[in-house]
Image (cartoon, rainbow, N blue to C red; front, side, top):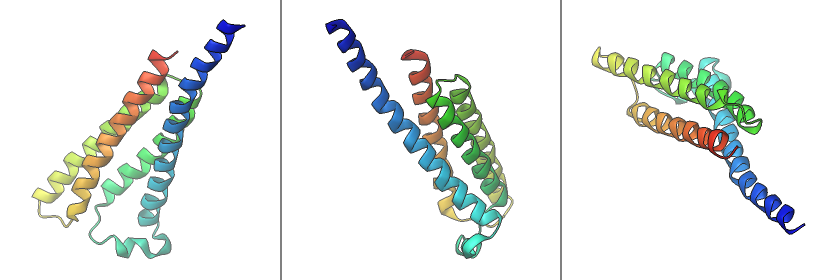
Length: 140
C-alpha cells in the first residue's frame, strides 16, 4: 500500500508541469491564432493598428498557432509527433525570419517590433519543443 501511494505521488508531481505546459502552449496558440487571423482577415480593425506588418510573417504565425494547438493535444496524449511538430513550427518561423531580413534589406516596410517578436516566438517555440520532448521521452 505504501509503495502504491508513493507511485501515485510521483505521477501527480509529473502531471502538474504537464498541465502547466499544455495550458501555456494552448493559451499562446489561441492568442497567436486570434492576433494573426485578425490581421489576415482584418477583424476588429486590428490590421490598421498593426502598422507596417509583413504578411508572410503573419501567415507563418498563423500556421504556427495551429501547430501549437495540435501539439498541446499531442502532449496531453504523450505523442512523439507533438515535439516534432513544434520543431517544424520553429523551422517555419526561422524561414519567415530569414524572409523578413531579405524583405528589410530590399527596402520593404516593416515594424521594428516584428524582428524582436520573431526572435521571441522562435525561442519560445524551441522551449516548448524541448519541454514536450522531455515530458514525452524522458518521463514516460
